[in-house]
Amino acid sequence: MRMPTAIADSGSAWERHAPLNLDFLAVSLHARRSRMAEGKRLDDISRIRSMPDLVHALFPKTELSRPSEFQRLLVDELVRELSGFTIHLFGPGAHLFNWLLLRFQMENLKVLLRAVLTEKPLIDPEEYLIGLPKGLAIDTRGLATARSLQDFVRLIPRGPIRAYLEKVIALYDDHPRPFFPEAALDQFYLKGLMARVEALAWEDRAIIMPMMRQEADIFLLMLVVRGKFHYGLTPDILLPLHIPAARISRTLFTQMTADSDLNTAVMRAAGKVLDEMPPECAADGGSVAETIESAIVERLAWRRFLRLSNLAFRRSHIGLGTVMGYTGLRRMEVANLTTISEGIGGGLSPEAIRVRLISPAGTEAAHV
Image 1 (cartoon, rainbow, N blue to C red):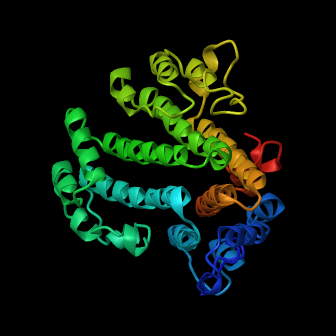
Image 2 (spheres, rainbow, N blue to C red; image 1 turned 120 degrees about the vertical axis):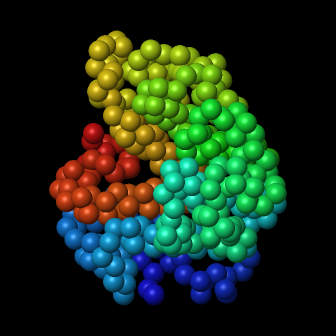
Image 3 (cartoon, rainbow, N blue to C red; image 1 turned 90 degrees about the vertical axis):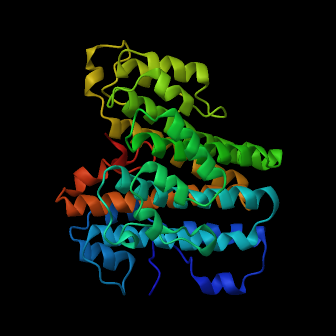
């Protein structure tokens, strides 16, 4: 299958013959970046009106008709590409990147967990799961047969993930909904991510930490936006999910979970998680707070992540920051292409699709 032009030259031929060298990998990523779907190219893609045309634009020799098939292919190609980077990394950089790949295993566990807790078994689990490299593979069919959260956790191999979920079961035993174990998996991953960034040499840490910390802050912000104001969860339930290394300190997180209106809570994130505020968020804490859409808040937070990923990519030039920055940019590319496919499937206009894209502030697609 021919690689998509949006996923620039991530092919295995280069990986088989390239020297094991971080500088060589970083230089190649600058070439790949030039062929990514962003800027004008992303804008052009957002004007496509059918799934076959979208697939053909990115995977010329592939025939797919459903958005879900296209999205699965995007993510599988992303995992395949990123997994190929590991042979060029060593030391703390390798530990960090290997942990970053664990995110995809976490996503599979959440899909399986959701099916168990909602009592909606997956007929064919592989259809809904990300294809993982050998080192991250899990017993998907076994986990899909679990009849309870307890059974599910017991089927996870002994280790840190299982131990963490066992603690969560005890903590949230009175709240048998997917939200809590899924949030705990995210917390486990993000805590480990922060610890591995801290272990980097200071030059790499200074470049990479802002984008990695932003991901932790997005998690905490959305715990407040969705957990408190959409699900009505109380601070005592949300506070144990805090991540110490985040810019949203425990004190600030406590304040946000105690706020009586969404407007005030989101305003506290200004300059920390959000570079700009939703237009509905009144600076005086007015009554328009109820009109803030969580999707807009989340999109603005990921826009900051996009900016920080680009900054890491540019500042590092040919170092570990280039690899991590590129990885962040690729994740946002996949997110945007997924949004376009969903918009096409939902019959949205190109204009409606573009306002949902994660793009740099000031571009046409950024207006909300």
